[in-house]
Length: 309
Image 1 (cartoon, helix red, strand yellow):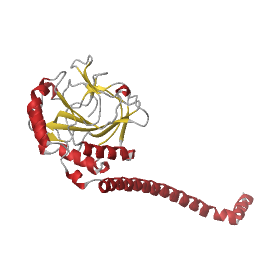
Image 2 (tube, one colour):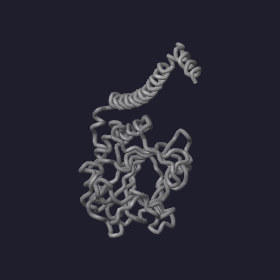
Image 3 (cartoon, rainbow, N blue to C red):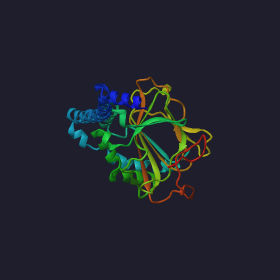
Image 4 (cartoon, rainbow, N blue to C red):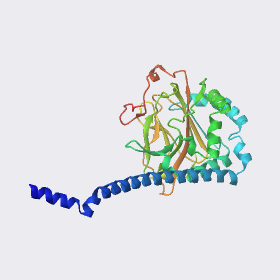
């Protein structure tokens, strides 16, 4: 035993063993520095993306016409005429109240919205890859370019709300400042959106969802690629109307427990193309029907079971 202790004391006096704790401390410090460096690198990468997005936004304004940015996105006199002429058709449309109009918005402004859409960094977008839904989307206002923000602001403004109320007969419409589920939508090759009825109550505003508005941004769209919006009958047996998603085509329809819609077939567009749209939803304090009063999430026709809100 005395020999073992003597040997251990001798080993501790060796320079290498005496330095071992210091080496361990140095290794731990290096590990921490590497971890902090990785965090810093991630932060710098995020900052770089933010700067690039800001540069894109500023370039869009510099290269564009500031007068165009401030211009009306729609001819409001024409809106009044449409509301008066098409209100009855909207309410009686089959399979549920809806409205389709081409060329409704200022094409020059939509050109800029499309350019901003195509130039956006997708890192901050939401991505779903489920059986019934394969798409990309963002409702983050920090990611939107100036023309996109201006378009959404006007579509959520009082003049446009007045048009919607006169056309649909639904009063007291409220826009969604949170763009919950709306904003920009993109479906790429192989993507789809199963036939469904939408969630019926805003989780924060506690208002009933009444209208869906879609503005398509797809130029030179080949209908053989698919992606047409299908409006199904209220029993969910099949499509009553199909609407190709072509540039500057607007679709408006009532939201209810039986307003089944979607495009259930995988998109067959080329890899460098995608189906792009602006989506906005409108609400009211009034419940459209007793059957819609209980809050539920999206109801996909394939399972008829509400998803969580």
